[in-house]
Length: 441
Ligand SMILES: [Fe+2]
Image (cartoon, rainbow, N blue to C red; front, side, top):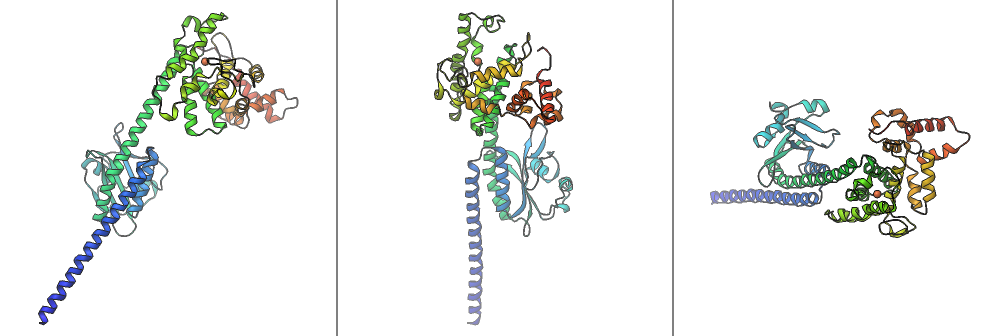
């Protein structure tokens, strides 16, 4: 009877242990699912690679209760593993892809889970030396995509209590698939962006190269327009619209015969009509590009850079509010560059005369609010665009002097009777660059 009771008790105790273990396992499983769900939700919307990497590292650090997490990606151009930003570090980390534990994991695809890094010969203490950090426990795992390709390495450092468990390994392995797919998505997105940007830049350079008289015009107009947009507090998306519309505003000139485009004498009325066609051509060429929905206004903005607010511009003869704001900005940037750019046969027009022409047409051709904002452009930025392509010869200290004044200031200073010493210095520095004499080669 006694023995039977003991055996019953043992049975109950063993069942209780089993149940406890099952409950712990269920808890771990619930924790794992919750973490995966959370990380999927947080990562899926992020397509900016840098922001995504930071998010992944921060999430994993929290979930694994560790001090630091780094995602290393492989750079096939340099055969290095690199991390853009590591939590707690400012700089980019880079090292040869066969170095250290991360390198070992990259090469072999093995998981390395060690409680004391300094007792492992594969550990590379160089980064610790550089940063003053003390690595203790490490969990390093290959970052595998859905096709089981290793695209990088996950490295989690210094578990806050004890060392990394098998449960941590399983969790990180599941996160790795989600993270790898989000990273590949973000990389693809960046590649697409780069490819689109290079396509736009190539089109613009093609145009600027053909037109040797106004070489660099599209680039300078874009830079002026972006400065105006920045002063007018445009957001990033609006700035990108201005940038693309600026680079391609004259793309229609491709369809204008060279004999008319490069004529250095006064144009006949018919020839002028042919030149004017470029605005409409810009629109029809740009309408052939498939822009993302957020950039759909670009053809219209680019094509409206010769519209005037009095309705006497072209191609549509739009007036006032009917002209897109981007077009009004490009119009001011366009005329400023046309008047101030150096030509093979002539130096740039004097600043006072340029500003007189613009002022005279403000409220007639140009939107007053745009001209008003344009005059807030800092002189260092203005001269850098005016002298685009010759900026390497500029003195940094002199640019610093110009930074504290605007275009509006220099117009005032030039007409002022009693100038202060600092005003005189600004005027001298700016005008010396403005009037530099050399011919476009
Ligand atoms: Fe134009």
